[in-house]
Image 1 (cartoon, rainbow, N blue to C red):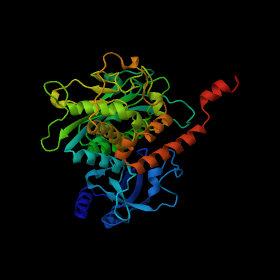
Image 2: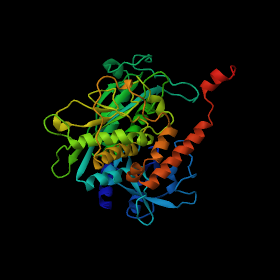
Image 3: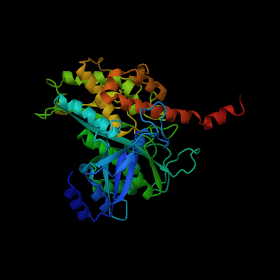
Image 4: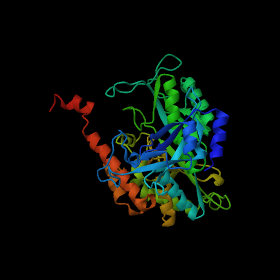
Amino acid sequence: MSIAKFEEWFAKHNIDEIECLVPDPAGTPRGKILPAKKFLKGIGSTSMRLPEDIFILTVTGKYSWQDSPVSDASGDVYLVPDINSLKLVPWHVNPTAQVICDAHYLNGDPVDISPRYVLKQVLQLYAEQGWKPVVAPELEFYLVKKNLDADYPLEAPIGTSGRAEKVGQAYGIDAANEFDPIVEDIYDFCEAQEIDIDTISHESGPAQLEINFNHGDPLELADQVFLFKRTVRQAALKHDVYATFMAKPHQDEPGSSMHLHQSLLDVETGKNLFKGRGKKPSKLFMAHVAGLQRYLPAAMGFCAPNVNSYRRLVPNSDAPTNTHWGIDNRTAPLRMPNSDPQNTRIENRVPGADANPYLCIAASLACGYLGMMEKLEPSAPIEGSAYRYAHSLPINLDDAMNKLNYSKPLKTVLGQRFVEAFMAVKEEEQVQYRKVISSWEREFLLLNV
């Protein structure tokens, strides 16, 4: 790692402070904030340390030591900043930088339960075959009025018209412009961080927006989505509004997804290996789709990682419920978009916006990888609505964890120790969730049973 490059970049931008970020299992940024001079002095050493426990943190901030490969007596790990992820923090007044870090044990080995490492390992498996996967996420989110009481349902914020949306306006131009001040800040913040977002559109829910990312390297795109979520929240807060990536924030409105387009290039030639003869997809494409069909149910915990995630995955809700695939069919969980043969790809429509981008991308690519290595064959593409078929995806997080536990191939690809740590996190989250008495129970059980 070149200290000189960091010093040059800091001097160019007059950096006073730097935020060193590492994603935890939920994709929440953890880490440390350092004065620029102290950060530069520590480069190349093991001085920037955190407890290994951050990789068994639940979304509530509690640790999941029970049944975890990490104990409460675990030691420290140290952070190694990735200079390729060095960015400005555009919403701070003082010149501040941010950098995404990899975690290592004190003996130099990478931390195998770190989400960023898990994705790197899946990409290494592809590289060993001479393959380079390419992905493009599409990320939906809601803008909501500030909510200081967790028991109170969320509401759409006031737009530039002075009114709140009561119903969704899918692809509405004027509806999207209602939140133009926030959107402009999102674009400005992304430009300052070199986050390569493409188009924005209004989705089907009130104050629900979608941003598309351009196709690129999976690790770079995971980094961008990780930073983008933080960026959107900060842009919204600047206007006294919340932005949420919950999979299902409103009871009677569509959920928010993170559709993932994925294709495959030959490392040496750059050729799209999903392109077959004429307009037909290749055998590798078909095997990749078959891998997604077989292994997505076991990978659901990474695509739908929270108890709320499964409220989105219900019939006739613009969200998938099974593992069928189709050609340009948006009811199908796996969609092959109509495109030039050179751009042949599959769109995984299962992941929710609440997914950790590193783990979601790693899991989706792992499913496709297993399909190609096992030379699986997919079912025939469906025509018409996929909701005509049985609900074959897990219906809750318990179901998803059970399927993951019995999928030896997926556990092997993602790493046995990582899967054990992840399952311990999810079990602890469910234990905490089961203690909650909901408003539905108070409404219908209090005086009726």
